[in-house]
Image (cartoon, rainbow, N blue to C red; front, side, top):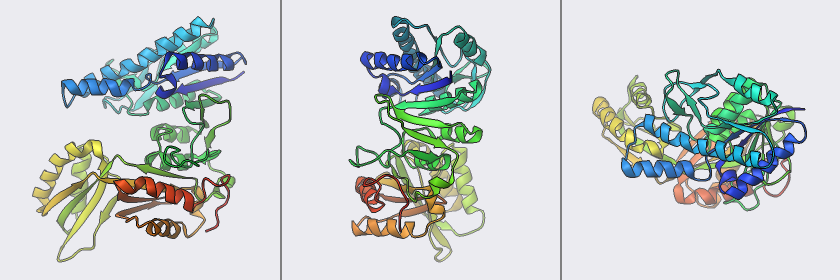
Length: 413
């Protein structure tokens, strides 16, 4: 008998038929004698629809009230899933984040979990043979204000509960069969990856792969919680995400990711003096804007251009900050470009193999895809290209590293 935490995303809960199918899947595990804790997202596109509705009322919804609104999506799911399980003859009980004491900080729309103080409610329910159905994505402050954990926050809820309950496994049931070598909507011969290290999954998530939320992977890495990403509508094994081992190093490149939600900012004619960069990025950080890639050009006549990327959603916020920065440092001005995309090559084997960058750049050059920015880590190389070249770049690199033509094996460079 095992204690299993399963998390189901919104795509798996988009229709009444899917709710009933998922209920059968949960019951299948329950029949094996397992204790089941199920974390659910809002049904289908409910969260997006709620946000869209709010923005028809005001362009800038108050974040506290936006959290109050968005949390209702998961509340629908826990009630509906419990109803589905009960209708099939099984005991089930639903819990909101507040009911099980998922305590967060006060950073509305992207709160961080501080502790879970009501986990005994779940343990007591399991002891009475209930299936516990928990709302993902939400928590509550010490002052009892409802908060949400940011996009993908239901994944974080599942991992945090797996740790708090000392679960045997934490499974993520998706509308794909596992983590793929690339987005199958772009690359038709994309293949499922059998094993990934935490670091690889983190890099893929930060590079744009939407299979798992990066904060949930970081949490799992910190507590060594093995994750299993698998398909909702198949019984086949999915992708296991765990601590890196020697076998993983044989895989040079594991996958290709992309992100079309970034924009490039360039501050022109920045005085080339100590402390200027610190001032620029301190002001940006104070505005709660995350910066991804940064490139500074060679200084000419005492000035330089500084380019960096941010998420498109922060463009309106950063415009106000840039005006202050330019005025204070006496720069010439700034440019904003939202017609770019980031493409990344990821693999732990890159630590021990040479020639990856050369192969990547040659493949892009052969298709006349210009590289505007480059960023590297030990296991990832990212490039910024024109937005209309992103899909082509992903296909080209997937082919260049033979990711769809064989099982993931050692790559010869």
